[in-house]
Length: 64
Image (cartoon, rainbow, N blue to C red):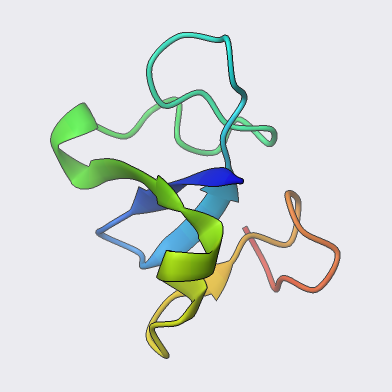
């Protein structure tokens, strides 16, 4: 599953496939400049101890 990583907050969000660039399930990245976002596999992002999952996008996440 692909996710959108907000490199400013180090938070991964679920990517809404088939939608416009970097659109997420929770919508939290809609105001973030594209240069701070990266589309990557969720498993890859969560392997990094500095990255947190969005609490709105993932049941085991914290905050948004």
